[in-house]
Length: 430
Image (cartoon, rainbow, N blue to C red; front, side, top):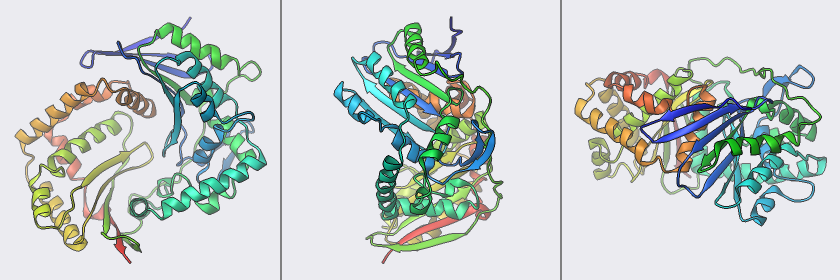
């Protein structure tokens, strides 16, 4: 009935079963033996950076307002009879959703209401209810959310770093959009985005837990078929358009003042875009670089902390998809200029010395060990599956890739952090 592919990971003692339903929906069942909790996720490969595409209903190109993917996420919870969050709550199940740059995902967690939760999750996605009145109401709610982000120094310093790096890519715009952009959202535009991107062939269903694989696939298929008796699913690839991003940065520095006590800084490096396995590999290498050179065990951190230049945290974060790629180093300090100077000099130094082979081996082995130690975390399992879906690779590619990483990969990554593609975002106290 269903052609199921089994992806096996001996290192994690875990299997993930993958199939595609007749409507084009990809289903992933990650079998976790002995676990009582189960997680179900219904997601779409649609996030905030996509706002220029071909409407699958009219076959015409359309550009929609920034923030509409996030707006749509909010509105799908609203039903004619009752809010979907209340429906889950009434049966004692936790449920929520999130929108990122390249995905929107709805999920539940349950121990003993699995079948009912699957039914409600499908209902949540398959019964859109948009009216002029509830759209206007949501504009006010999300407008308050946007103003809250605008008043949050950590959000502002991060977004300013993205604005400094990118000239055209929509990653420079907040996921929630702007007060102005969401004012142009209508119920008609919501239905256009829903029909285009919430098509089964652009979506995925993930279940993580100790479930019967065949029964779960049948359960998902049965519930979805309730809503697909009239319209045949669109199986063609969705046409999306992105403005070509120049490799050069937009602005070297953005400095603002806000009501804060301690200045904040983000140093960003705009990187070249990579695809498929290279996205996952770069993220793994960046994680190793973070531990080797920017964690609390490093001499740099200890020296800067002892001098009173660095606070108790220093974040080194890589973010990358098939449309953008960057590194952001962030922290806070009362001596922001001295810290900035020291960081620049330190990065130049580690780029020009050999990678410590012993330290690299220790950190890499720790990363491999942590993959095993966190394998009992259901959240780690579903994040791995989502990453594989968005990159178009096998579920356990990260487990295989990390073994192949060498100190030359670390050196190559460090060399990406050049002055030419570097930006600085600072928030100073008023």
